[in-house]
Image 1 (cartoon, rainbow, N blue to C red):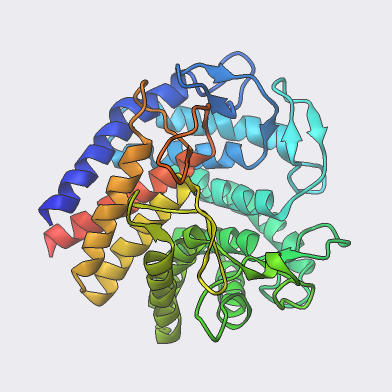
Image 2: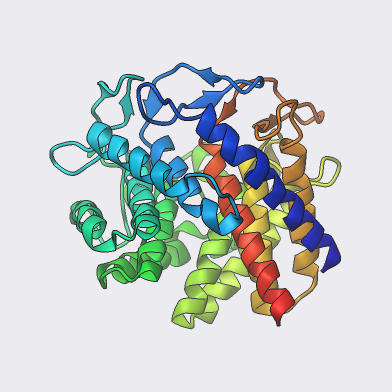
Length: 382
């Protein structure tokens, strides 16, 4: 355990002493409100329109901050950021618009399923951080029920554009994550219903029965989309779905979900990690050939989460080794000139793209660190 404890400690020190202060001091727009989309590699904000999905992700990260030992004003940040988010992004019908300008004026009033998932997720964690479950759950339930009313069948959440011909597993994954969060927080029975429907769809439609891999794009009947899109398999999402299905399988006593989650983890680890760079890369095809060998930051975080939960469930020490390797991969992306930032893209040649750090990655990073800390603490106490 010494290796994984050392990585856990390094990651916690990085987020506590560098990332949380930087992304509050420079990553929040103290003049106009709301979080910036990006910080450049000198630690200065990039002025740009602000996507709906970034705000609740940052709210989540700061809601988590006290558990990771940050002593800054986390509660006040969550409270302030939540008020700005609700006032600028929530439409009159309870859905959340896609994009606003830096001053808060609406730029794109359309709604995207992915953004609604993060609205639910952010509301849950804000409610817990602020002790306002009774006040914020009705907002989330109203949104959830609007989404469920648009389902062709339970769990089959489509893009909110009725004319869309291609459906995706990814927004459903984040709705699954949000519903599990609300269930754990003590939400009403509708959250378990939502989670069970999405898990069922994943086990019967998203995951290929022949290979055990999870696909990304589907037609309107939840069959693989025609052509190349229907063949895409992302290692990062194999890891992320593995973590979620392992959690759900534990909760429901579903050995089939645990088996499926472990298979997803094995696929990603076997076919989606480049041993030369030590990182998970972007995508495969359904025959497990490489489709995109570039490697973004976020799959490294999902590798850690899946591995530590697999280690807990199976008792196999090999998964702790995987988690250690995943942490080493993540730490490469955090080695920046200004501490508290990150690189987002690593080329097949092992060169990072010199570009601003996207705020959207902070959610992935903090979630991975928190899950690693939880699992290590539990293991050490056993």
